[in-house]
Amino acid sequence: MAKQIIHSKDAPEAIGPYSQAVMMNGMLFVSGQIAIDRASGEILDDNITQETHQVMKNLEAILSEADMSFDNIVKCSIFIKDMGQFSDINECYAAYFKNEPPARETVEVARLPKDVNVEISCIAVK
Image 1: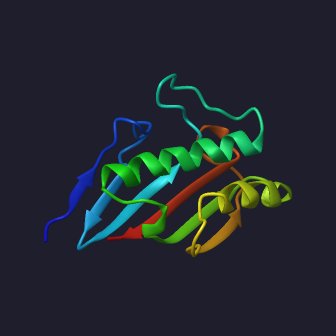
Image 2 (image 1 turned 45 degrees about the horizontal axis):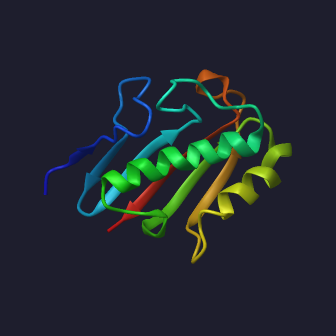
């Protein structure tokens, strides 16, 4: 099976030389998403909860384009600028996984693209 590039018009355009997601053998590899609002092009970062919700909405748009949902995610990677915001990010993130949450790691980093506070990528399986 050949790889398929997944592109959602409801998620922000890639800000570099990468695809929003790539499907291969029933597995979807979603690039890290930040809190860019597709409609305005603005980064929504008034507070960490709003920022995390926007990241999750962007992931959801890409999953939907591949006919998947949060239930298909098997692994997430979360990159945050301040581990002190972990509990707020975690609370928001948990709301999207009502059933069985995926495996994941959360890593504090020095800096993220566009100086955002959180970036999340995932792997989903059909």
